Image 1 (cartoon, rainbow, N blue to C red):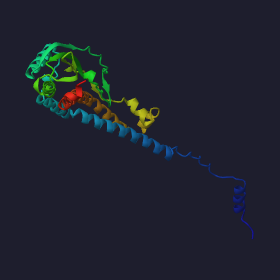
Image 2 (cartoon, rainbow, N blue to C red):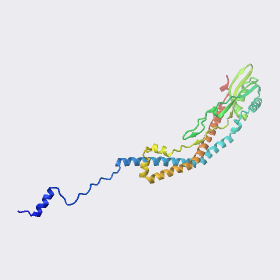
Image 3 (tube, one colour):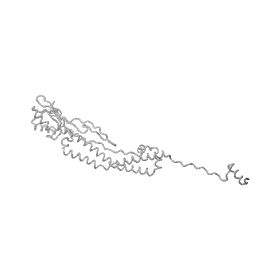
Image 4 (cartoon, helix red, strand yellow):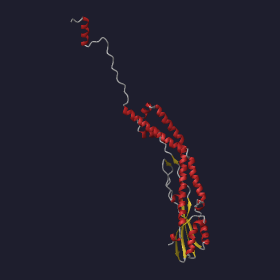
Length: 292
């Protein structure tokens, strides 16, 4: 079978690679972040948003909770009034008043007090921080809360029943809180050593919340070096996060007020616990506990 001249020419051109049109340029594929990288960025962003939301909520709650702190302080004030804490442990040594009250109690118990001495101890310096930031509180020792007045006197005549009555009724018969430490019979006299107390000036630190900076949040979320790229990719989410950070600043002062009220309540609660502990010891105290 003979091939036409036209067909032969076309086949020859194809074999030689010839073409009547120019080939189209090859397009490079569009670069997109790998799924793994995208998932990691989303996780970092979610971590950042969650941290800011939690802190914002906590700060807002603290700022609005001053009423609760005032209730705690009010409860302590009522306890102090009911139990006459200010009368039993005043805000100054009042040494002369202690001498007067002990002398009067001796007379009521059928005893005569002589050689009575009362002297306030030197108070120690208190190690209280200038301020508290974040969780925590001051653990107050007795020395940080109260001063001590050392009392000693001689009582006559020697009479066990009279001295027993003196010890048993001391806590209820005089306004000041006097804690008998020891009693000895020496030279036909009772030698008594005791302590009385006064509360020192209240000292509690202002308490501030922790409010992180933007850079600190980014560092905790692991995006301190990539925040610009993430913000460019997720502008709406970043705008929300920054708005929450601004709102947190509006809660700072209210939160500090609440936390400082709780710090004050904690100080006075520590005073109350000291008072309560001494009162319980006096209720249980007998002559046999202190007689040597």
